Length: 105
Image (tube, rainbow, N blue to C red; front, side):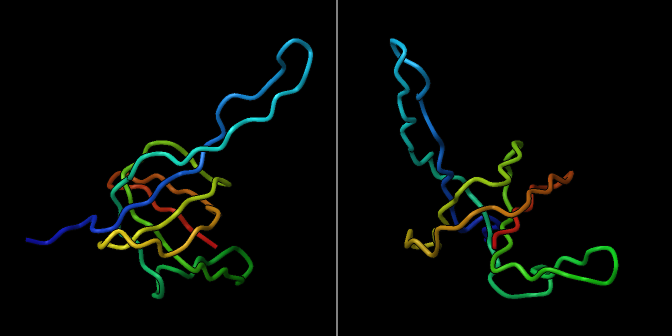
């Protein structure tokens, strides 16, 4: 059987922080749980055409099923064996009817 989401990714989130007794407290960073996905390193989907004939080539395009816009957040990609492939920032997030597409620079 074909596995449409053989890879996983995690999102880095900031927790806590703020002002306690008038003193600033730094937020703690924590990696979220595993989200199933499929990512592509090289291919025609990695080229995003912009108005004016320019384009951007992204290192990874990630297909997943998350409803939130995580543009600007840091993610870690893992292959089907659980090995970390990269840790990068999400350049843009596009929600479609079938899935969410993350463009990673």
